Image 1 (cartoon, helix red, strand yellow):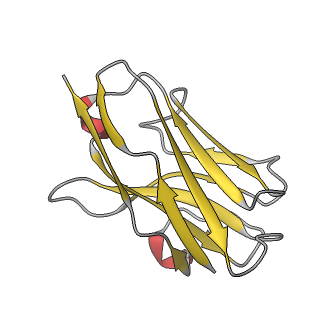
Image 2 (cartoon, one colour):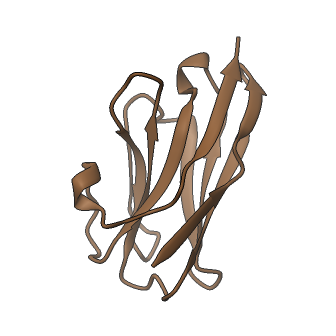
Length: 123
């Protein structure tokens, strides 16, 4: 599975961005997909995950109520809608997938990773 993240950029605090992650190589049916981020000088941290039917999602407390993860299995693509952005959301965002239909929050649980897309939020 190859993952290609896009949509990062510069936003002002309170603004919005939408990240996309397109998968190729195989259909993600049955796969859980998620987003992680790494801020400068920090460890990679969990942001959100969605199980393969799209019916169940999980969010980090820091983004709950502001970010929304979704997926379009027909397009083999997942998304992260980020609203009410804060400067502390500044990070490189990575999409990831794991070949089981159960959500995980640790990076080690995901076997496939995209290259990352930079999100910068100015105050």
